[in-house]
Image (cartoon, rainbow, N blue to C red; front, side):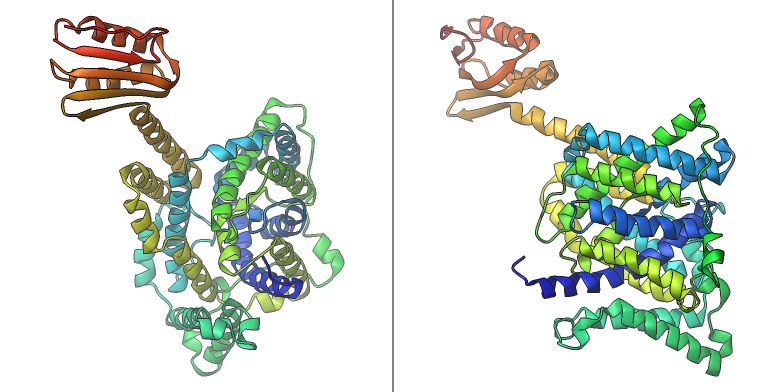
Length: 514
């Protein structure tokens, strides 16, 4: 953080270009997958970048429409009856989120297990790679941005990949390989730190190259050229009045119904949980390890959703894919998120016809590199080295997210993570050590009835004739069930020919001698 203002600005501008290229297809893909107008995804991306970026205290997090809310968006539109009524629910959900932030509900975000958060990052990386393989091969039958294992066309992640290898497009593969080579080349220190080449991110060069290659294919090898569904598809407006006609505004006609409030509360709660998870993960990706105020983030998200709903946008959350792309591209401050929102707004309005020339296989190459950075083999080795108490929750979270979706998978991961946390605390609350027939039983912190089974197991292993010291000086609380078990053990000392001393268990030291 000792960099000068110009250096920081350069880092943030460069990162914002990468995030823009990642966000553009995801905003469109999530909107289409949600049965919503494509422009609603762009609006949500712009609001997530500019409005939430300005209000948030996070330095690397980027907000926008979230794939995890796709099912909720579809269900809400069907139950309420129209997209306009759904937008009204988004507005109210934003107000609820702001209230949650004001009430300091963001503190919940500090209690997610680290192993689960790292598992979420690794799983998102795997999903990115697996979901982009079809697009990289030119099989563009599903929208970008969908992260669930099962898809609306009754296929799943793996069957899509199998079909992609069968129904591939040579032109898409060529563009993807060249784009990937350019991105990896720009990752090399000599290029990245070069005075000239280092000014522009490799992802932007890859996209420009992808457009040029596709143009050349049209001239010299038409059968390989990519068209229609293989390209980005942004609604094009020829005038400002036509552009304003693409906007949709909320209808508050069901404000007095229970269904409306249940929908709004669902969007607010699920969106808040996804935001807190993404913020926790984003802070871990921040190279400076800065901590984002969680409740302030909920307030920012609330205002963002309120504004997004008012002008026809999808619900907005902090999104880990965009955030990881931002951090990986070298973003230093939240200016990067704001710049990416400005780029979305300006370029989609001014040059949509040029953006519509971008091959999806080219953008897939960008997302493949983002995914690999999230799920590097070194992460799995690092978690394995920390022991099974960390590795098992991590691995289960990865598999659960991979084979369900983000919200279901993370819920499973949290439950497993908490089980292992409780198990670890059980083990640390009671310990027994032995030296030459002398046993030390330590009670530490709070020892509740939940520790009774472990205590009885450890006591049963102490042989007859042993000398035992029960040290409870560090115990802040000892449950009645624990005390009764210890008293039973002490009272049988004569029968077992044991010598038992206590420290901190009673006001006076209790001694039983054979």
